[in-house]
Length: 113
Picture 1 (cartoon, helix red, strand yellow):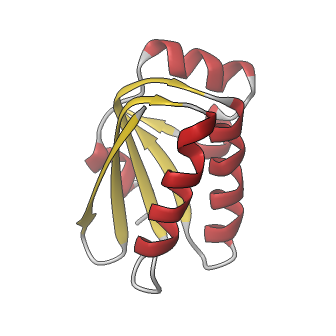
Picture 2 (spheres, one colour; picture 1 turned 180 degrees about the horizontal axis):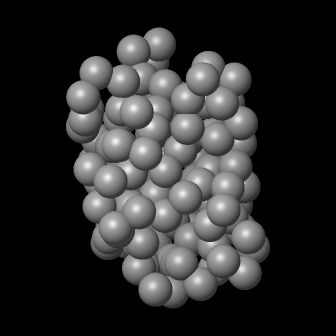
C-alpha cells in the first residue's frame, strides 16, 4: 500500500512524497494521480523516496514512462532521499543514471534548474 502526497516546489516542479510500498496494485493509483497533477504548469517531477520501502517492476516501468513523457515537454524526473534497498534496485536496473538520485528535495529540484 502506498500513501501519496504532492505539493509544488517553485513554479514548475511537483514534489511527490511516497510512503510505503509501491506494489503492482498501487501503480495505477500513482499514475492517475500524476496524470491529474502534472498539468502544463509542471514539467519537472521530484519523487521524495525517504519513506518508500520498496518498488515493484511495474512501478519502475511507470517511472521510466513518466521520464519519457516529461522529457518530451523539456522536463525531468529526479529522485530524492532514496532508501538503501530502493537505491540498490535502481542501481541493479541501471535506473539510477536515468533519474539521478539526490540527497534532498532541494538538491533534486536545483539539478533541473
